[in-house]
Image (cartoon, rainbow, N blue to C red; front, side, top):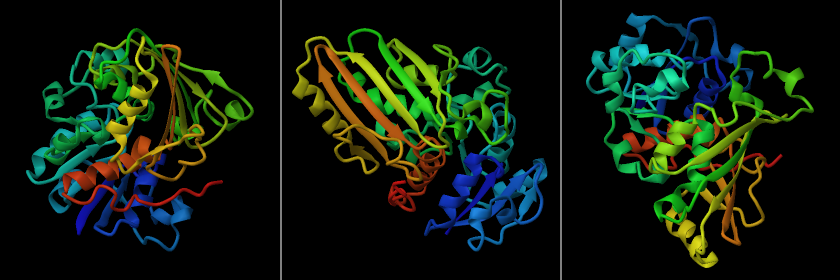
Length: 341
């Protein structure tokens, strides 16, 4: 059994990660840490009643290093800026331990990008070159298998990259790409904030951080670094899910060739499904699946894509990466349908 520790177990990402790992046939969850919570985990996360008798572990540097020595994998489900300080100590405490960072602290290889996009100086810039970007469907699978430190992608980034990567890989994009991304409220985290809590989002719809969202540089990087992407995220009045509509100029590319490009890229991918009637958020909630539909017409490829921001956009992707890092079948613990409603 793989012994796993989750550092930061009170947020939505840590909560969903625990839910997935508790039913994973090859994983034992050894610890779930918190700096604010005490007592039984099921009291904080009542949907897990009867599934775990874990209690929250109080965390400090000594506890992190002990868990590194006792566990095979450590998941960091912490806010941006925290993992960057703490991961080097975990990796140094035990040569065999593997780390998956769910925050944005290791997604960008250039340390100069962090003050611009995340608002802080990276405390360990030399560690950035040790991290591998964790989106298996887009050319990173072999690197993930050999990695000790995987940077889990951002939720908007996962959706946008998956929508456009086949076209970028084939060199079919001719000009600026426009992307409209719509996300549920869980993407803003568990702590209520002005503009993100329920009274602000209910029966409301608005754009935020247009053309300046922190996921934009990892999108551009994953697409090859040369593509121009105009990315505008929106907040919607539902809890879970992301829906992408991307418009990519493809010149005079044949419509059948565009469809074949996606079939060749994703035809064997276990978590990407063709949604011929159009991608819907509801069909992917609670799963690691991505639903994708491509509509080419008059020099444009319109791609709609849906995924669960807490599933394939976060915790599900982390479990998928863990499976690869430990030589397991990629779908282990993840091959399940959603609720549908």
